[in-house]
Image (cartoon, rainbow, N blue to C red):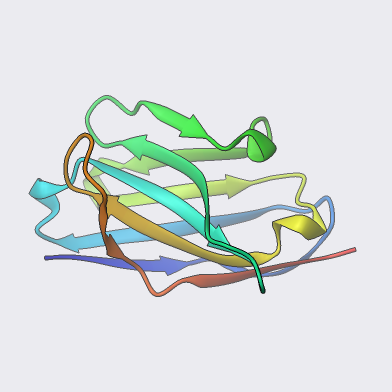
Length: 119
């Protein structure tokens, strides 16, 4: 089992910044990558970013490229999502999720953290 706990959400004005954290514990040796997803009210969940624990390879959803940065601290088993130039359309509940192997699904999810961007 892998436990994921997100933190860092909040209310920010458009153009502002927030940094989300996702602390992983439990069977962390079985992790392959960690991703961030978000779900806005009335919308489907969407992929935001992903980082591979070994090597740090990253990928981003197009609408956040150049504004969001995903990074990791292996010593702390923590992944961060630095969000800059926030827009009202970034408002959503943000979840981190663990992928335990290449090509596998995201099997473990955190409880989510609310991000609200006011215009």
